[in-house]
Amino acid sequence: INLRVNMDSKDTFKEELIATARAIGRAGFGILAADESTGTIGKRFDAINVENTEPNRRAYRDLLFTTPDMEKYISGVIMFEETLDQESKDGTNFVELLKSKGVLTGIKVDKGMVTIGGTDDETATQGLDKLADRCAEYYQKGARFAKWRSALKISKDGCPSECAIAENAHGLARYASICQENGLVPIVEPEVLCDGTHTIEECAEASERVYAGVVKALHDFDVLLEGSLLKPNMITPGKECEARAS
Image (tube, rainbow, N blue to C red):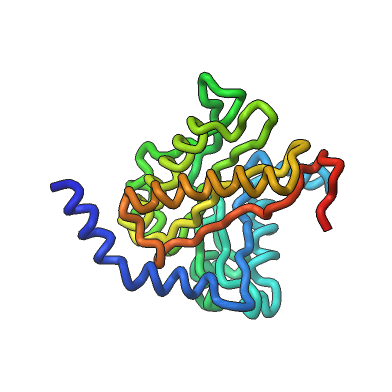
């Protein structure tokens, strides 16, 4: 019965999800990632001697969102949770400001990464707890897509392991399913990291295994692929690889 309810929820948003995904991914446009956490943006502010306060964070985002003609190039903006409730200096809510420009609002919903026990310090992304409630709230506030990032490393010791691939694929698929049940288009981001000495061929092989695991999980959870966005990594040699590709 619960599965039927969830499928009905996705059916309710089906056409909207597809339209949103197409609008974000239309040719000639990109996504602005303005979802730095409070800690991350603090590091950037430190570099220019700006205090990490709520008014300064609001002013920084205001500067980005009011850039003249940004809507000619940007189809969507990913926000940090705090930014959803902030306003431009003229009192206009940021979500409404972007909407007036034809720009869709997205929201980062993952809660960071933790180490998977029994692996070579591989990680899994957390944030599924109460995700449905948060997605419903974000939709009511005007968000129409979401972001969740997983990171998998390549090493000579067998990473990414099947354990890490399975865990991250499951998390991405559950996140995507929950988002769609609540009207948000999920950006599915299984990033195979470029750190290491691996060759471009080893990157391609690892990425293929990761993508295969993720796509299978998306199918298993009945995720609407037309209402999703896949963000793959580039296929490149590792940063420390001596054999450079041209």
